[in-house]
Amino acid sequence: MPISFTGGVFGGVVELVTYYVKTVPSSTTFTISQTPGGATFDLSNDNGLMTLTADNPYITVSTSAGGSEVALTNNFS
Image (cartoon, rainbow, N blue to C red; front, side, top):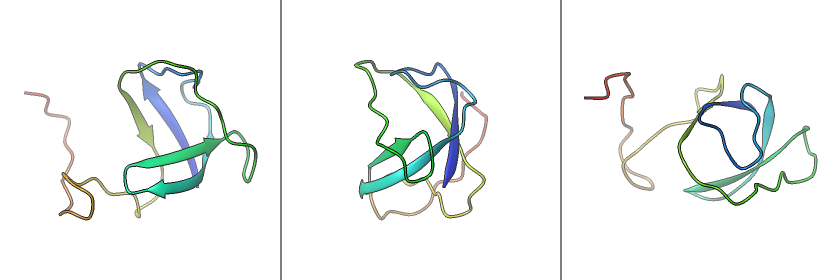
């Protein structure tokens, strides 16, 4: 599945470049590659927040693994 990242990207990820979800080893982690089926993209040591963007209705956000879906907004208050 193609994805891209925006915001304060880190770990060697480049903003707005298309990456691909390679594996989903758990309900809270996934790996990415630079090409479909390509090698796992190794993130450099870093941390922070970045936004994942995907045109896929199967990506959902919940407060816990397997929990109820959370509706996202742009209200940061």
